[in-house]
Image 1: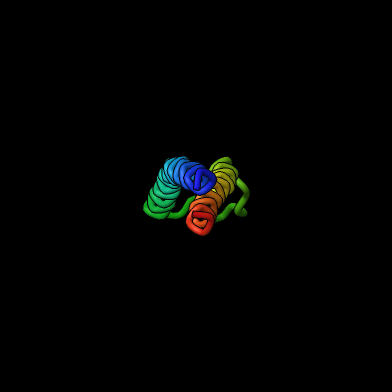
Image 2: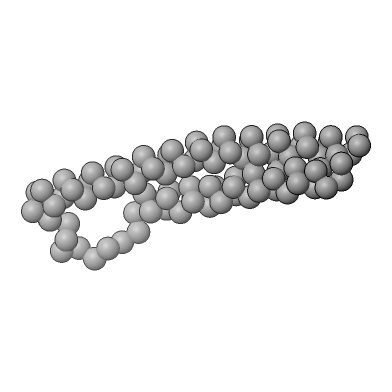
Length: 92
């Protein structure tokens, strides 16, 4: 029984930490996407002056890729917590 309680506690803590951190990263990613959409609308409003250039990787693209990687990492932490929580239910 003490092992089950320990698994439950560790599982709940990992779910909480993973969820909170993933939520923060998701908020930053959503803000970055919102700013990119706003810049695209502004560019279209100005006549699409950037449309002649070849698309290149920007700093925002690199940041977006890093944020997605962080989001997946924190989601994996929360998933590990859920697995430990379920293991605690099975062990108890």
